[in-house]
Length: 326
Image (cartoon, rainbow, N blue to C red; front, side):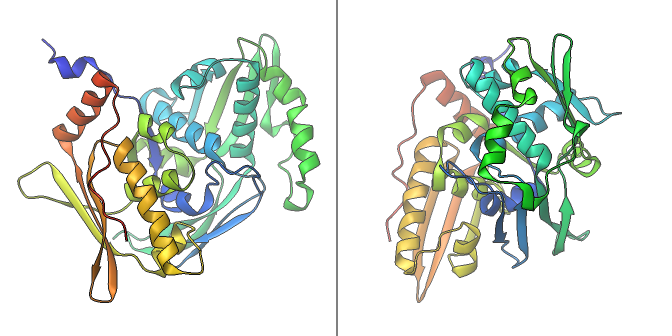
């Protein structure tokens, strides 16, 4: 017989390791004006980039949900995953409708078009450089007998991408097919990406928190999930401590002139994380002599699962009272 807590299914997504490490710098979370080329730095100092198409909030969320779906039920021989646009919207918690299907089709086309420079690691997990990557090798939208494949036309060159090009995409046959109620998508993942997902090289994310947060707070939450934590010897708790230095703030794209302003922005974002994600027990910026340290404590294992299910049962935010301002 199932325990009561197990009757509340958790909504999850999956963030692949290489892309996840770069996401805080490359994803334009809730930006009004998306740009086609973005560059950033990793914690190890490597310069990473996204070009040929922007990655915004919808693109990020769709990629993480598709990754989980592929890992759970995708075709491992062809590295492909197929689903209706409506079911994908439902997984994302987005109301179904014509405009929503259009936006999702555009987001998937961007994920197909984008060219990434992502960090590479040696066998010990040490970052050793960057490498050009694509996420998808094929993208097709189906509706009744109509089919449009992403490979039917060459990917755009950086010099060809303009605002007008974006408007052309919105009115294209590709998006028109997506308007149909029964429109479905078939995506073939790039071999490196498919292998990483199948090997579970990355992090399982709480989709409820992921969809609830936006802007800088979401960027910070994603970055926190990709950090290396130390497991407590006896308790279901793990911790992480690091210096809040220029490299860390730069990775989060916090670039105010005054360090104090950057720390205040980070503090506000951590407050939102604590309020939304019940697994974070403490997230505190503390001063040690002349240094500022970020100290994080969060639940793991069965304690983490129970806290997430408790939120599902009661539908309440967790009070964000475990953080001090600096």
